[in-house]
Length: 300
Ligand SMILES: NC(=O)c1ccc[n+]([C@@H]2O[C@H](COP(=O)([O-])OP(=O)(O)OC[C@H]3O[C@@H](n4cnc5c(N)ncnc54)[C@H](OP(=O)(O)O)[C@@H]3O)[C@@H](O)[C@H]2O)c1
Image 1 (cartoon, helix red, strand yellow):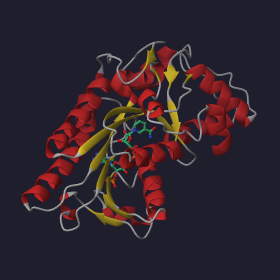
Image 2 (spheres, helix red, strand yellow; image 1 turned 180 degrees about the vertical axis):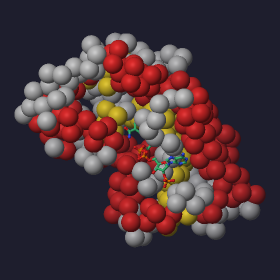
Image 3 (cartoon, helix red, strand yellow; image 1 turned 90 degrees about the vertical axis):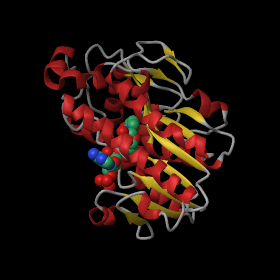
Image 4 (tube, protein in one colour; image 1 turned 60 degrees about the vertical axis):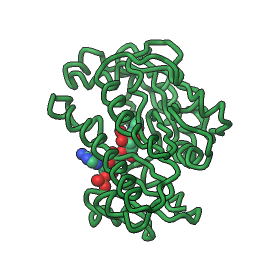
C-alpha cells in the first residue's frame, strides 16, 4: 500500500513512517522543508513539499497530521489564526490532490485518517466523554471543529474518512513527556492547579497502531477518540510519573501562576475531558498500553 502523510516529520509521524516502512508499505511525506527533515525519516520515504506534488504516484491512503504546535507560543489572535490555518490548509491540500486525481481519471485513495484532538470536546469537568458528547465552546473546540470540517468534503468524493481525536501522546524524546520529565527527575514536579482536570493520554505506539487499524478496517468512518481506555486526572498523572521515577512530586503549580504565565493557553493544563475511546474499543481495537502505569513503565 502507498500511504501519504502530512506532518510525517513530526513526533507521531516519524514513528508512523517507521512502522509503515517496516511493514513493507511505500511512504510519501509532505513537508514544508523536505531537505531539512530527510535525516528524521527512513531513507525509503519519498518526501515532497506539497500533497499535489504526488499526483504522479497516487496514494492508497492519506494520513493528515500536519499543524503548528498547539503549545509553541501564547495564543495571541495571530497565533490562533496560525494554529487554524496550518491545519485547515494542509487538509485542503489533500482535498485538492484528490480533485486533481479525479480530474485526471486516476484512482483516488480509499481512506483518509485525519487528525483532531481531545480539545474538540473542550472543558468537560468530570463528565465521562465519548464520541457523542456535545463539545464545550472554547478556542480548542473551534480549532478542532474547523480542522475536522476541512476534511469532510473528501467523503463526497467517495473517500472513507476517519477522524482521530488524539489525547496527549506519550513516548520518550518528544511531546508532553519531554517537557515534564526534567523537573520531575529533579523532584520538582507537581500537579497543575487542583489536579482534578482529566488528561486523556495515549502511548505513541498505540496511536500509530490505531491509525493503521483505521486505515485497514473498511467499515470504520466518522470520529474516533484516540486515547487509552483509562484516562487519569492531572493529580493521578503527577503521582504515577513521580512514582515511576522514584521522586517526590510536592511542588504544585497554582492555577493563577499558570494563567498569568500562559494566558488563555493555560486551559491546556488546567482543564480537560475524561475522554474514552468508545468507538475504537467497540471496533475491537486492542491497546498494548491500556494503563498509564504500563505506558510509563515501558517508556521510562
Ligand atoms: N503530540 C500530542 O500530544 C498531540 C495531542 C493531540 C493532538 N495532536 C495533533 O496530532 C498532530 C501530530 O502531532 P505531533 O506531536 O506529531 O506534532 P508535531 O511533532 O508538532 O509535528 C507536526 C508536523 O506538522 C508540520 N507543521 C508544523 N507547523 C506547521 C505549520 N505552521 N504549517 C504546516 N505544517 C506545519 C511539521 O512538518 P514539516 O516541518 O515537515 O512541514 C511537523 O512535523 C498535530 O497536528 C497535533 O496537533 C498531537
